[in-house]
Image (cartoon, rainbow, N blue to C red; front, side):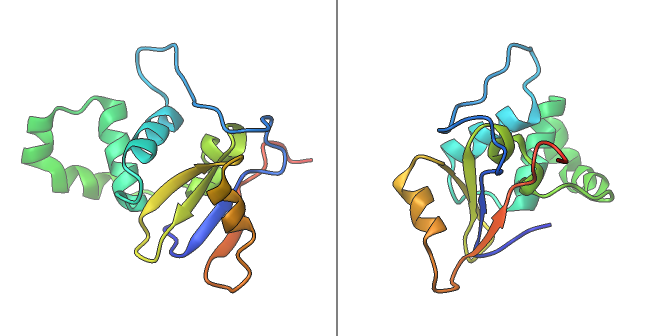
Length: 139
């Protein structure tokens, strides 16, 4: 699912009070770490679909040569199945990052303590739809 003009706010049961950078001690980085790296280094560069694909190829360690030769095939295969939206990402659920989709569906992240994050929450002109991240627990 891809959004436009939407801001996903931090989950109501997020365990942090300010954004934290996700880290991994494993050789293979988890998906939320890859999402963080891509979105923090390239704000408003990726659409949801582009982000899913880029995270997939990095997570699986797919070689650039394979991507050049079979990129469209890999993309079609990846998107033959549904993928969760970023409301389910660990970034807004556990690490305190709000996620903004601009008018073109390009994505950027904002720490919950930032001025920009607060500005999105206070937008009341209807230009940005506010959605909560999914909760961590079902309570």
